[in-house]
Length: 106
Image 1: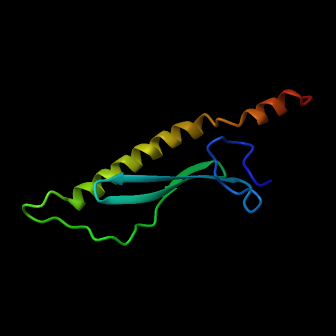
Image 2: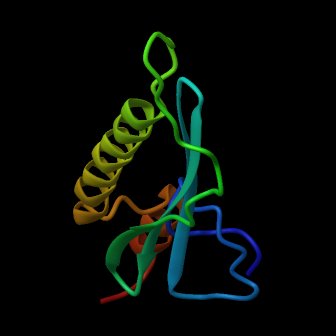
Image 3: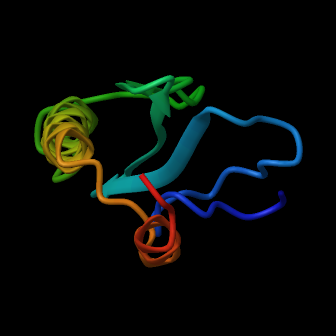
């Protein structure tokens, strides 16, 4: 199967991976931009990121504070992860799965 029949938010190509569901997010704050991967791996929610090679700097009199921006980006990513954990706890499945289960004799 190429798309995901289980979760509306899943971006995984299921022709390669079956029990892993992924969603990518990008967080931008000021001069900082970071990509994160939210993943439901065999039912376990996790988040990962490869930190981009960017220069982080602060200088007296400059408006740009990359350290504060990086901190805020990480804080926002953590909030998104916490939301993701809450969503996956309820395991919102794709409506087609629910409809299919209605037709299963049990």
